[in-house]
Length: 140
Image (cartoon, rainbow, N blue to C red; front, side):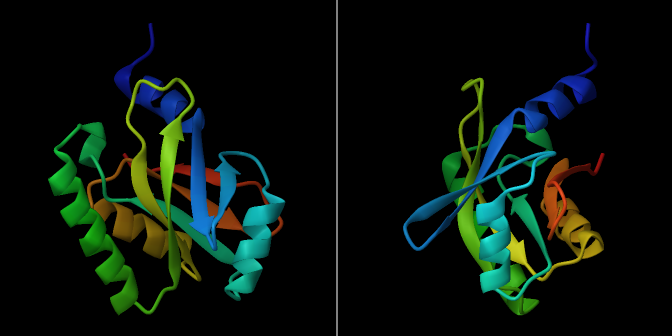
């Protein structure tokens, strides 16, 4: 039997994180390098990036309108920080959890990404650094 946090960690690891830019999907997987993601980072002059959502804080499903408000607040927060980002979503491969709208923020440190995600009640982020596999970072 797995603990709730272990089951959650396994679910996050079995999720496809997708950034959408100029009509193309850029797939990011935890513990994998993604050449398309690295090219996208380079286009934004970024050596680091973080995949962050504001949807469903603490892995609790909430109404779509509440998620949309939180997502807009996240986008405004990143804009105030002067960080470029593109939209996207996270979708578990098992298909039992709805896709969550998210952002891929560029030129953000892992520390800042952790801080932003905690502000929106998130349990984890995916952090990217050029030349390295994407890192699933648990916050709780």
